[in-house]
Amino acid sequence: MRISLYGKVVVVTGAESGIGRSIALACASAGAAICAAGLVTERLAETAEMVKALGQPRVIAVTADISDEAQVARMIAATDAAFDRIDAVVANAGIVVVGGPAHETPLEQWRRALDVNLTGTFLTVAAGARYLIRQGQGGSILATGSSTAVRSFPNAAAYIASKGGVHALMQAMTLELGPHGIRVNTIVPGQTNTPPIKAMEGYREKVEPGLPLRQIAEPDEMGRLVAFAISDAAPHMTGAHLKIDSGRTLA
Image (cartoon, rainbow, N blue to C red; front, side, top):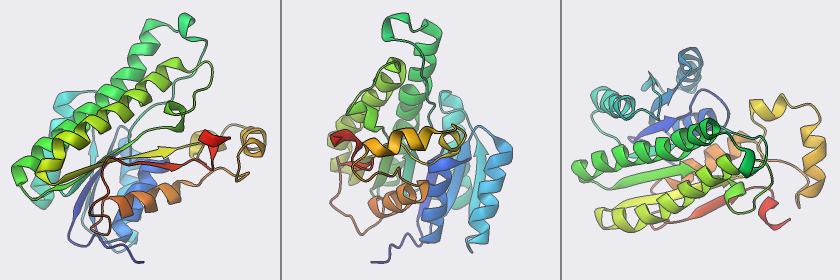
């Protein structure tokens, strides 16, 4: 089945690299115009050039800190100014915070994880929801959660709590936005072969034997799933937690 997002406009946060970049590229390949948003201006420009290389000239790069409400509002306004509509908002941006046990987690570290992963996601999807409601044509909102919110592990309490909050937030918004014709879904990655994972020598060799599929996922697979989930090919998919974790949460 070929996924089509032709004529649609998609905002993707965390689009500088990894899963976010793969989402932007997958959606562009399916025909969508793209707002590639994130913190690193130079890498966003790289993503924009990659989108253009796919034959999609309708792309903008917007530098924005999702934990700042004004910057999120500017991101949405820039997308509207460029394309005169938005059809989907993908709240993918986040940070990984690991350290000691929960009772030894510094408050600054705790707050940073929640500010970016939970509050940043909230600000992104809330701004997207307000826009889509005003536009009055339905749409789609999707967030990136984590398999750690389903199956925990030690020494990452701040990260796990923040992603658990994302899962709960998206469930609540599913019920609230459904009457407006807005679908709300969450992708749930496990270990994924992103640049930080690639930089960890020996990580794959340590992790993969414990996974049912014996292999971690590639970011491109996340991109394809998101393109499908926000497309018209999934008109009744809402409230879903879409796991691509090589079976991690069952292992």
